[in-house]
Length: 256
Image 1 (cartoon, rainbow, N blue to C red):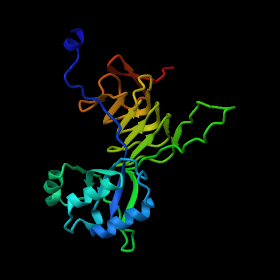
Image 2: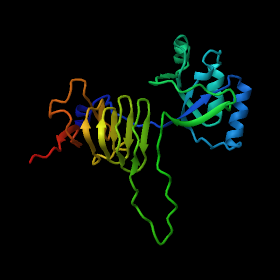
Image 3: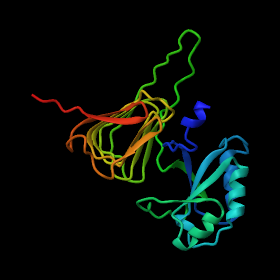
């Protein structure tokens, strides 16, 4: 009875969903089907029920059979959840098929005419550590090194450090998103979104040399900053951690 009184009917938390981006350079179903067969080699578990975002920038002027396209990709283990670079007049038809409109800040360069019918890559950018070699019976190391990013994370990009901390030595721009299953260390301005403890690690933290974030989240608990940062002065290094169900931010600026 106590749980029913204290538990909220709905709780909203930030969650990490990784998808692949599929660039469609042909609209003909036969060409797409053959490209998928060539790509997967006929293996039914090649994509293993992954989410997919379709980028139709190079064919947005063409009429697309969304029901057939969704069915085709589902048959090859890809569940289409959103469409990118669709024309405004097509948004209603796309949403009518249960798909979302994925908005990107910058259009990518035109696709060359000789491009393959389908290109698959991370969406928008997923940086995942290479899997470690299988441990031998004599040695089973549990340590996973941090992922290090030395270049700016730009608007529309997403970096995901799966199973480890994330260290970034360049800026995280507005509209960018950085995610880690562990803690996030940013030795430059944080202006986008930072999500630490993505798989529920409540001990994860976020460190930023300059705090100008749009949103921060730890273990799904999030906080936005539409009204600024009243707790401390701007342009100070900060530490962000979870205290109970609240995000706590403290300045790390030292005084002489």
